[in-house]
Length: 413
Image 1 (cartoon, rainbow, N blue to C red):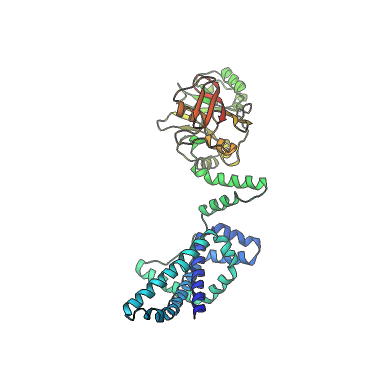
Image 2: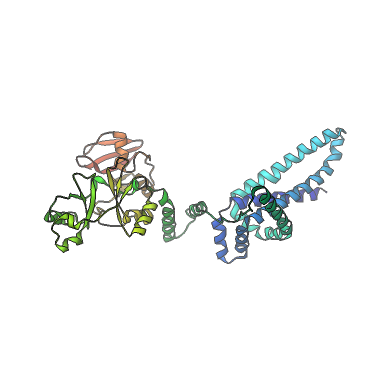
């Protein structure tokens, strides 16, 4: 009798744990296990495609063995409790309290905690016994699901459709996070990082990847063609923005190839350029670029002023990393001087610097770049050789112009 009680309790715990393991598991990882060719992967993949059947089966198994355990344990406890009191109410009360405590700890809390932590491994290890119970209880499961579907249709006017979603973006993101902790070849890690960046693209705002207005190459619509030609030569760019009156009124751009047509004035070579808000996501603009066969756009702030310029290369860099293009100043790069000293471009992204050099520079929504971090704490434009302390970091200004910081030396205390 005691052995039977223990077996039924363990089986109830097994079904309870498997249920939470399936719910907590990464559905994408389960599906990928099928490609390994192992039978366990194929079994788990089948369960993943019919989650309602699987979960209902686990609930039925759990309830069957809990009820069985309750009946057996009551027969064991009744003689012992009647030695203390023969009052029926107290006998039932003591039985209920004891059984409830045992079930909650042994058949619910402990298995669900352990199975949730090791969900994927548990499902792989117990794939065969799970499949066996699934086959045995499948007829009961089907009857219950059909009955539930009828009830749902009567009261809500539609049928249940619980197997539509297989895995979500969250599953993919979780799977990639797990891969980061697995020792693998460098090229695989790069691929994982690129895929994670692609997932984050919808959350990346244009203000985070644009070329700021202070670095834009612009000319007035009233400039002459010789002046425009000199501008192309001096900047070595293929596109020059054209404004009317001031930089906040961009009216288009000129491509260097247009000069081969010997135009009379800039207006004859002017090409239209789209305008997009700072708050637009990089993914949305990338879709627009592809749809409209464009590769450049002006980013405007909430007041309609020019914030900067964004190209398809800038967005692509958010996925694959730095790409050398005409807007990059390759002669100046971030450099690690020693373990605690770095030379940084002031326009470098704080988050990227933290990731690249494993630092812990303070991050905030109020700024994106190293220059923004310094100005946020300094509140004025520092001069060359000025030192700015931010927590345990010391920034020494090495290059500035009239309005912006250009380069700094960072020392970690």
